[in-house]
Image 1 (cartoon, rainbow, N blue to C red):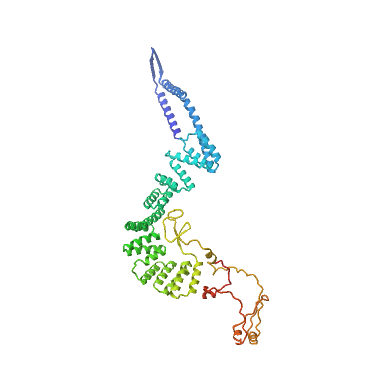
Image 2 (cartoon, helix red, strand yellow):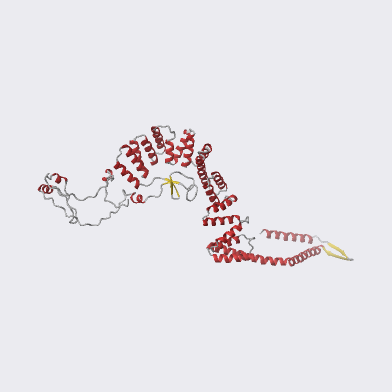
Length: 533
């Protein structure tokens, strides 16, 4: 549009110029070689314009003829390049679709039409075709050749990294990832693999630098970066606890500042502060972490903050934690443990039972069994509580990739992933899955196979017969002929001393360690269910 306006403006200006000359008559005289030529000014102007136009046309024709070989060759070169890019595009689509034969065919066609130094994607297509054909050695050679080209270096490192991962050579994979991360830390695959390598070797400072580089390149969000830094600083504090307590304390405090609800960081920072006799600051850190998420390690360290405290002082500190987080099972169990140590059995029992009501789990029953053993020593009740503990859900623990650990660790021992351990209940046991809701759910009762009933022996004694006949009768249920009328206690009381003894009916032998039936459960006793455990 702008070019059209400029053209129209030029034509309009030329027309104005000719009109201006036409309105001003004049003559132009030219003397050449003894001849004198006299023409009007308008004719002279038209002649000059015509001569200039003719010269320009002749120059264009000469230039076109002179450049015609180059123009023709460029036409065929562009046509060849277009065909090459079309083959390259088709080959890349075939490689993505998994068609190795078509990808190889189009890679050869593209290599003939386009030079590989002009288009690096040809090398990628050849490597992908080799992978689809199962020629991993040839693919690795092509990826190694890409390392010499600065433009293709990262692509070659990526290919070699994936091949090393396929072969299970983690050292080689981390080597290639480290080279890529040093050049481009924004690459997620390179940064993650390098981070696993650094944390696996315990190079916490190097890992912190890499996380900072990831944060600066906006590869990870700010909250995720702070979480990773807190984990790495906590691991660094644990590693330097014995060798450099001051550096360990600084790292732990920074970790706690980045993630106040991260229990391992709070425990590490408070522990180092307690070792330096700063009980007040360490207690505040633990209290803040306890408010965010109660944890048994926090409770254990908080109640034993001063080693010289009496058991009553530890009980008071446990009650203070309970005030910070009321109606919580972990708070009740903390008070129950401290009360058990202080021999306050009533408080310990009350809090343990409250913990069971809030969170029915294994540790609460075991704690109640310890209280029972310390207070009464009733082995029957103890065994009963232990049997309930076996069937109850397991206590939370540090779990990562199916591994249960008593202590927190910064990386998973299986996959090497950072911050893999989570505080949660491990996988449920089979017995727990079957019996966890036995009191609430109605489990169908499986009928036992019918057996021929024994003939009841008739007690031939007049006193017994009289008592049975005088006893009030109850309506009999509509059952088969094998129903036996029970003998009441009054009938046995009426038997004289000189009566002949009768052999008792057979009954199941009771195991010597059988705890018996809980009096509380006896009232709610239901028909016997079949259990696996």
